Image (cartoon, rainbow, N blue to C red):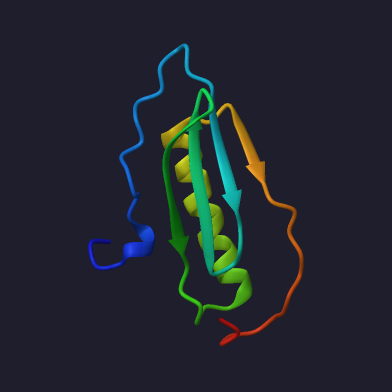
Length: 95
């Protein structure tokens, strides 16, 4: 993880308190997904998560699903905002 800047949080996510309303915003893709976290409307961290583009589409989606499930468990968002997605292309080497 230390050698891959795409999997490093830009800032540490603070522990969520009882009076915090947390939003996880996602710009999802099958190779690089951007995320940001807002506590009570204030940006507290952001970053990207990168999946190996050499994997098949289904494998990349599965890796992203595992990362997202772990992120939700760790960060405890009250709401998740997800950009409307669109199919752009299939296959490897498109990035």
